[in-house]
Length: 118
Length: 94
Image 1 (cartoon, each protein chain N blue to C red):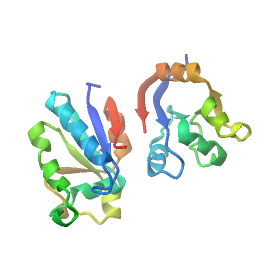
Image 2 (tube, rainbow over the protein chains, first blue to last red):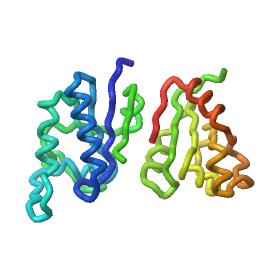
Image 3 (cartoon, rainbow over the protein chains, first blue to last red):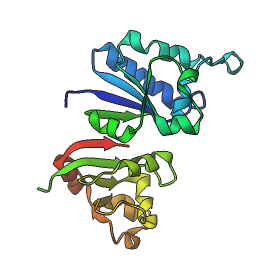
Image 4 (cartoon, helix red, strand yellow):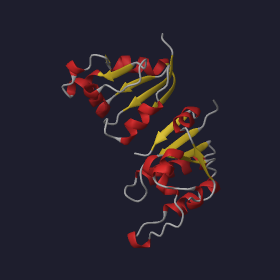
């Protein structure tokens, strides 16, 4: 199992900072050429929704942050299939390039390191 | 030295969504180690998957007065906890 880190975000966007901190960790790892991917689970899948308009809540849209992921070199963005169903998130309502996974726990086991948001 | 495939270290209370995620990730050959808030599960220990050894950190259990309701959980001290981590092929801290 080559060294690779999976950052798991299961916290909803905007309500708390844990998710953003985890995203920053992922970007830092990628910036230092570590193999890293992101997995969104539970309420965290809501990060992936398209057209987030955040001016009224005075926060930067996480959608914009996420668009930087490939630039930083984050390998893959995964979304938990069951959570997507639960929050009626369909591929067309998600940002591009997200891989939907049927078994998140299997995905977690495939990475040598795992870190959770908060 | 029994071999552990994946050691799951859980510190979330049973009501926390991450606890549910952890429990659903348990597979044969894995071991579960409860620490901090997760030791509350010894008081509600019922739905764990059969065949998965469950350990709990004694200082956390005793601090919360849960000593007598942890029959089907093995209490470990810090040194024994370190041994568990040494036996595991992979560790996931939930």
